[in-house]
Image (cartoon, rainbow, N blue to C red):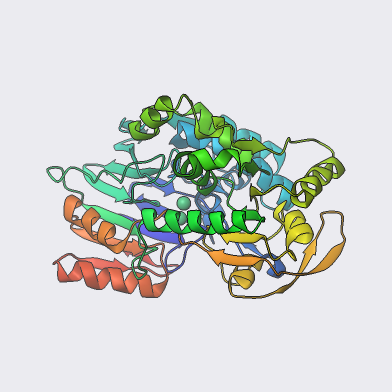
Length: 457
Ligand SMILES: [Zn+2]
Ligand SMILES: [Zn+2]
């Protein structure tokens, strides 16, 4: 008998954490995320009760580096965990940066330097499609999830019971990844624990979304403006650079893209893994044909040199946004909750020729969501404690890129893996319900879980 507890990200998205245990005192934890709330609330939430179980947990596995799946992991060592943390090789490089950044922002509130160091030492890295042992009678395997670099589905074999936990997965073709490869139907799954993020949303095809973005960029260029694209450092930013290097190719030389903020650190990690093990052969061939190793090698993609002095960085931004020549600026933070994008908006937000192009999901209550919903007057700080009231007169547009599977893809996952039991998590209640109705109609046994739900199977 297995017990599955969803400690976070059940009927919502954020702080993913699933715990599986049995009567033999074996306990495995899948993902240990945190949830960031709008900055004005000053809140960060973590999986409830996970600390209590840390000491008695045998293994921790992380599906991918996004902090809502990985961010709280080092805190387990403060709570008494002694075991290993399993993840794919690129995921380790990414969390190394994200965890340190989290410590810098949060202070020792969740974990200290020593817990972070122990966590990094305890990471065991794996390739896709290699089975490894995590406890007596339990093996695990990471399967490519096509969500971001290094993202994985986690397949557990627990005394012969096959459990598939999807983390986040994508069935769309994106620049670095092919659509997800579904599990082999000849090898059915017993228990499927699946995300349902987009189950009740219609997602536009990637081609349409990118061509809409291209059109807006071209219009911005002909107005003589600067195009500001706020973006999450990891994943979406590298996709945007790849799209532009490929679709916008010749134009990028006269309308160059400047990259600023933590995106540069993530670019460096993507560079390390530009090989067939981790990205689609499609992009490798395309890059090779153009004489590049990575999209970032394009002459039209430039960096705002990272200089230690805050004041110097500010000066560089001022020069870039203030000059006459058009340019595209790709920068953090993705939900406009701070970061270099504030400098650009403060100095360029009132110029009608400019554009603000939103390419990522905006959590309700964040500055990004307020701006996307039409708010024109905003208060932006400059990182030196001063706050400025800015009137946003530039063009604001949103583009719906998604890193998550469509409903069709979620259903295909079920059809390929034919599980005897499905648990729907990681989605708003309406998304979970839509998903459940869909797979119930196909004759599958599905249960939507809400927080603190514990099921026995
Ligand atoms: Zn994710
Ligand atoms: Zn997620």
